[in-house]
Image (cartoon, rainbow, N blue to C red; front, top):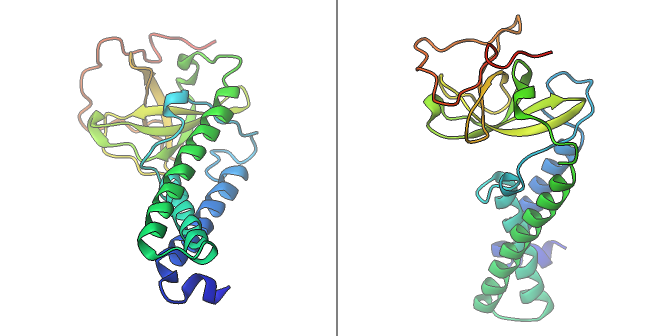
Length: 214
């Protein structure tokens, strides 16, 4: 196996194949066991817009590409006996195919979990955990996991304060016309930490006072 992966030009494909596979499998395991659970005792189920189910430049996409590139390249060079240039082309095709396949599978899985549509305003006042870092001052979108009706949902999120890193505990304080939620970091007492100078609320913003919870 060592000679297959690391002899001659092997490392060009062997290293991406091994690293990509290890990271990809580890990421899947962490997702399956619910890494990032906000409370530790809630059943996990992810919901998101099918168009947002997979980010092309996410870590999963890079891992999938390297895994596909490495194994396809090794198959071409070692299995078919091709030279380095055609093996590189086949490896790139294999990596791109893996990214496309993973995106299609994730969209299919997550789209099946959209039955029983959830009103986005149901998330207001709930705690969650950032899944993708949220840029500060509404400069871009991140993603937040929120448990609603015993199912974990994945929402696109913005914040009025400073950037919120992946894994931080946040609280949903409102929703926006573009179907995102607004979150703020949550303190140890479970209260949202308002930014030092909160901007005026945008048109269409729905906050706790506007959408009372039952």
